[in-house]
Amino acid sequence: MIVVYVFFSFLDTSAKYVVLAGVAPLFAVWMRFAVHVVVVLFLLRGWRERERFRAASLPAHVLRGSFLFGSTILNFLALQTLQLAESTSIYFFGPMVITALAGPLLGEWAGWRRWMAVLTGLVGVLVITRPGVGVFAIGHVYALGAMFCNCLYVIMTRRMAASETSESLILFAALTPVVLLAPTLPFTVSLPQDAWHWAILLSLGVYGALGHWFLIRAYRVATASALAPYPYLQMVWMIAFGWLVFDQLPDIWTVAGAAIIVASGLYIVHREHRLHVQNSAAPNAEDEELAKKL
Image 1 (cartoon, one colour):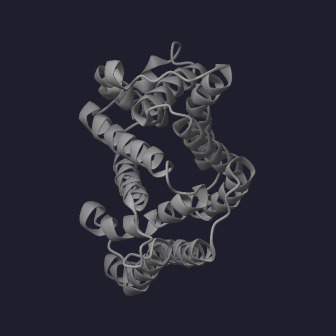
Image 2 (image 1 turned 135 degrees about the vertical axis):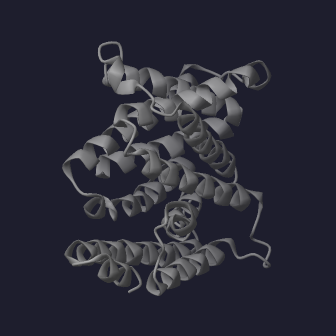
């Protein structure tokens, strides 16, 4: 999981770099997913075991891939104006939104303690964006939209995990944006200036594919609750890369808001782990339902 979020940090840093260099965000997104598809097929040897990539529900894959596309393009747009640490801090509010949406969409209703963590995380977002004091801008809107799309992507993944193979989930998530964006290419192509920028652009798909590949491997050898805290390490890499590549350091408001969001997210991880233990030990459905409300 540490390697996963190093790759995802490389992805965001490289995306910001090429977009600021003049590459159109839509074209950068298409290249990111096109290379992703090629790398995934190579890593998983798609030409040998095609059954592993068979989709049980193609419409569900398309919808899930559309959410991933929305998250990616909005993130790329946000990175045009926001610092890496700033956009990542808002992204970390995602687990709280998932907790809120899991009730109506998955039937996994949160208790009052987790709802308090959700509201506390929202305070962290408000500290970062500070609406009403001239700080909230279009970049924050893009970052919030990217975070929300990613939440829907995660929820779709949880719904489909029981009926779809890991290989199909990782392939169709990237193939959907490639197909959907293909008609826009004549209008969005903006070629990089030189070989260096070409290399950075092509690396987007490599970082994304390798990140997802290591993510699958991580979940094969460890439980979800054991891995849940590790995404927050990405803040360390994003602050470091923002300073090294763009000479940017987050201000005190971003650091404070990020700390609030991370603390809220870690508390939700802690509560869900405790509920999992309690539910496993609950002798009947009534006790299990009571445990969920704790």
